[in-house]
Image (tube, rainbow, N blue to C red; front, side, top):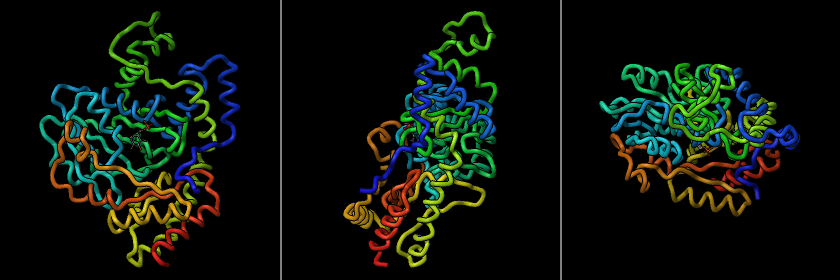
Amino acid sequence: MINFNVPPFSGKECEYIKQAIETHKICGDGQFTKKCSIWFKERFQAEKILLTTSGSSALDMAALLCDFQLGDEVILPSYTFSSTANAFVLGGYRLVFVDIRPDTMNIDETKIERAITDRTKVICVVHYAGVSCEMDTIMKIADQYNLFVVEDAAQGVMSTYKGKALGTIGDFGCYSFHETKNYSMGEGGAIVINRPEYVEKAEILREKGTNRSRFYRGQVDKYTWVNYGDSYLPSELNAAYLWAQLECAEDINENRLATWNCYDEAFRLLEKDGKLKCPTIPKGCIHNAHMYYIKCKDINERTKFIKHMERRGVSCVFHYIPLHTAPAGLKYGRFDGKDEYTTIESERLVRLPMYYNMSKEDRKTIIESVKDFYGT
Ligand SMILES: *Cc1c(COP(=O)(O)O)cnc(C)c1O
C-alpha cells in the first residue's frame, strides 16, 4: 500500500534528540527551540517567531492577541480545518464564514467586504495547500476597516506571496509542524508576531501569564504573574526533531516540488481532455508542494475514484466537510452570502499521496492508476 503520508525524516533527528537528553534540557525554550526560532526569523525576515505545541495552539494565541471585546466577529472561510474556527470560538468570537474561490480553494477576497459589520474585528485567512490568498486585496480591506489579519499558514511554511513568506504578511501568522505537514516535530507549531508592540504580550501569554522572558533577558529582577496565559511552549525533544529538518529544508522543499511537478505534468493532459481539474497557482505565488489534489466531476465520481485507487494500493483522502454545515459551525457562526463554491467544490476534491522522499516507482504507480481510472 502506498501511504497517503509519511512523516518527514532527514536522518539527524535521533542524534539531536539524544543531545537534548544528554544536556538535561528537555523542557521548552532550550538550544533547539532557539536554533529553530532564529532560523525562521532570519529566513522569513519575521519580527518574532515563537514555537508552540501545535498549529492549533498558535491559532489560539493569535485569537487571544487580537484585543477581543464581547460581541466581536471573525471572518474566515468555511472550507478549512476545525482548528481555524476553534481558536476564535474559544476566544469568544462569533464566526462569519465567507465563500471560497474555486481555483485555489482560498477565501474569496471579493466577498469579504460585504461580510464586514461594525462588530468585525479579525479576518482569518487560510493559505490552502500552501498557496497564498490574494493578500494585497485582503490587507487593503483590513487597513480600510481597521481589522486584524491572522494568517493560518499551517500548510504554508516556505511558501511566498510576492516574495514575502506566508505568515509574515498579516498581524499574526500560524504554522503547524504536525507529522502531516512539510516540516514536522510530531506535534508542534509556531506563531509569527509581525507587530513589535504585541511581542511582549505574546511571550507572557505563552509562558503561563508570567514575564519570565523579560526575566531571562535581565529586564526585570524577578518574574511574576502579570496577565492571563497558558503553556504553549513545546518540549526540546520535539524542537530537536524539527531542527534536523530545518537544516535540510531546501532539500525537502525541492524533493516535494519534484513530485508535485511530476503529478501536474501528467494530469494537465487529462485536464485538457476535460476529465478532471488540476490546482491553480496564481501569479506572484510560490508554493511549497504541501499538497497535490485533483477535482473529480462530482462526489459520486470521487467515491469511485478513491475506491479505484485503493484497489491499486494507493491511499487517497478528501477533506474538509464545510464548517458552516457542521454541528459546531451551526452553533457558533453564520455563512455570509451564498455558498456558491464551498460545498460543491469540497465534494469534488481528492488528495493524492505527497511526502518527502516518495520513490519514483510509487510516483509512477500513482500516476498510472489515475490515468487508468480516466481510461487513458
Ligand atoms: C494542520 C492544520 C492546522 C492545525 O495544526 P495542528 O498542528 O495539527 O494543530 C490548522 N489549520 C490548518 C489549515 C491545518 O492544515
